[in-house]
Length: 313
Ligand SMILES: Cc1cc2nc3c(=O)[nH]c(=O)nc-3n(C[C@H](O)[C@H](O)[C@H](O)COP(=O)(O)OP(=O)(O)OC[C@H]3O[C@@H](n4cnc5c(N)ncnc54)[C@H](O)[C@@H]3O)c2cc1C
Image 1 (cartoon, rainbow, N blue to C red):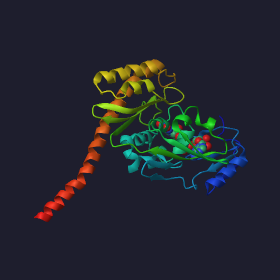
Image 2 (cartoon, rainbow, N blue to C red):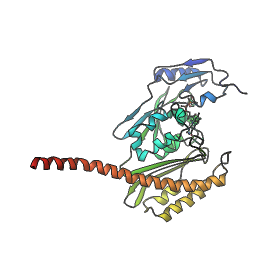
Image 3 (cartoon, helix red, strand yellow):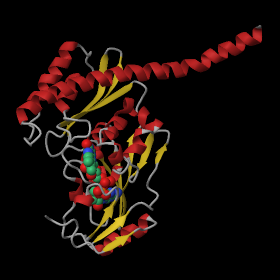
Image 4 (tube, rainbow, N blue to C red):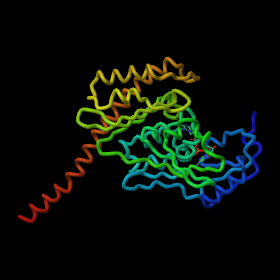
């Protein structure tokens, strides 16, 4: 049996991002960041000689501003699952994706940074972040840079992260009150690895869909957008026949890989069904969000009315 990290001799726990980057730089690729450790704990790499524990970098946060939600790289899935602002983004699509990551003990450990850097083809968060048009913030010895989720997941993230770079933050734009979303993980059990993941984010205006973003994961090595299906849905009334077209178009587009969980033909068929379901769920959530925000807008008027009628009486 292969040994876990057989060449490991160093452990660091830096207290600032700057120190972490200096330590990574000096390691010349032999030292790596340690986040939740759920994937590193299984690594048999002979290249790694040092671990940099990210726990003290103060990157475990979720901050809400007017336009976006900033999530620190060491925030864990549990943090996303219970945060009200995360719940409000596109009907809770990011929260659903975080909840799909294994069981509770796993969600207590897995970090946002670890989940997106160590991309497996069945990973949950990257699918939702692509659908939400998120931005990834990175810091290294040459400074800071930001990269769109689309660019980050175009190839395996480890390919375009330099050895001295850290993912520090993920920025998720807030969505409008006409926006809904859905994330569906299809697996044998809730805690199993996904056979397919689908995320859908859309705006509901009248009877039509707008700004549709549909992403499929676990079909191929990298998650990708179903742009043809998005175009089909754009500005179109969401009828049962349109949903059927979206379903069959998805089955035609997706060219899934085979693995021990499912063969490609089965995955193709299921992909269409999941896409249809995700669109329906996103559509329904958009209606809920509209109803809630409509209610919020009406509330002050109602209280003003009560006040004024009280005054008159
Ligand atoms: C039983 C089990 C079930 C799981 N099920 C799912 C699932 O259904 N869906 C899903 O998406 N995930 C699932 N996961 C989690 C997934 O497999 C990875 O283990 C996890 O995403 C890694 O995150 P981590 O924080 O533990 O990272 P670590 O293991 O600490 O690190 C992973 C890699 O990323 C690098 N890294 C970490 N953070 C940073 C950073 N900020 N900047 C740069 N590099 C960094 C590390 O150096 C390392 O190379 C499951 C895990 C387990 C153990």
